[in-house]
Image (cartoon, rainbow, N blue to C red; front, side):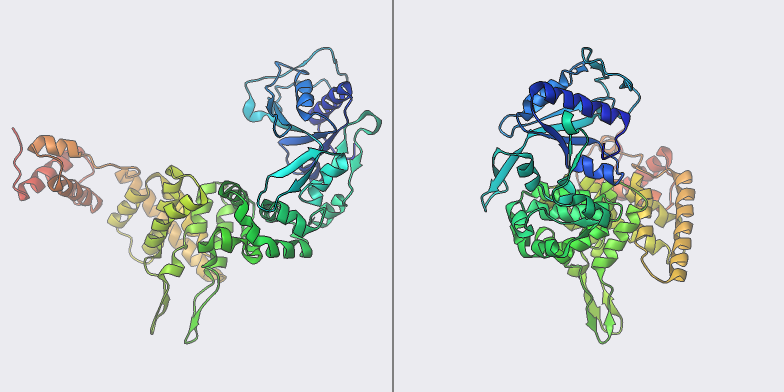
Length: 501
């Protein structure tokens, strides 16, 4: 075989080949699986194209496993998918030296998270209406199917047919483009991107994921067709954004999005960060590239998508709060507060989840200056308590973001900042061990206050609760029920409230 498959992969490909032979149809392994095998990148799925009925082939392949895996098929699109469970574990036993065709291969149907996904489709050719990404599809040849592929590196095919099993079919020199790290389209790029504008996002995503270069004419075509992204659903655009966000070095993708003109259309708030302004010889840093450096710094430490979104949005309100102050220079006062307010609107526009993930990002954007401010003063227990109270279980993520926010090229500055952050971390540890303030709730509830003083919900309940909380955070009283109860009685007396005996 022209690509190196492991024993399980080869075994399954032979199963597919024999099923196709029984149906008397040609079939080929095509696309991302072939590309990733060549560059030694992990693969979790495979695409099979056949010159015939892809759904029928999927059913025939599924019969070769026991229990028979479910075949998910979409008749209107002529596609089908099966999952081979246990593939990435030792559960699926593979007979390496013989293949008993009369006996279906035993698999463990309960290990879906370890499944290998195989998608089947009949070879087809496509034509497009200018106002829609939905193609007009008709049956085609293998050549037609390769012509419709987005990039040369994804148009590679491997024959699974008896007469030339394992032969690489590469009509567009995709193998050469892989060797040189080039992304370009099989056909004219302007036509490719106009037909399906999502391919512009995919080109940039592959450039970021694989750290390849987009061929010059291909990139020019993206710039010229950027406006066409408007016909793509927000969900599809955001899916590509998230994939770029999860790259090893996401700045590659966002820089290309900016230079292509796409970012201005899909995320204009981000482009507002771009550039530096000067007054009286005083300028500020380019917050766009600063943000991308922070994002890369976070990406080196974690694969957490939402922590990466926090990095991308941490300075998003700097353009809105930018001001030049005579004798001082550029300021961005309150950008963390304004930025936190912007997060729900941005998540809504991008159709990102409006649940605890959004609230996590909003919290980190709102708090990202707090640990930095603690490094500039003598750290009091009260200041640390307040940070712990507001950050809760997300304090470690917040500290990670703050450290990633250090992008100075001055090594001595970076070293000093990191030493200061280490002091803050140590103080957080000491106060946390003493006061246990992560996800802390004051020991006196509103219900207890109303019950004790016979009052309805209202201003006085809030005043007492706030006073107890502030007293504990300021270290005036201990963080326990008895101290808080005594303080409640004292505060209620100041409000002329008497306890009900």
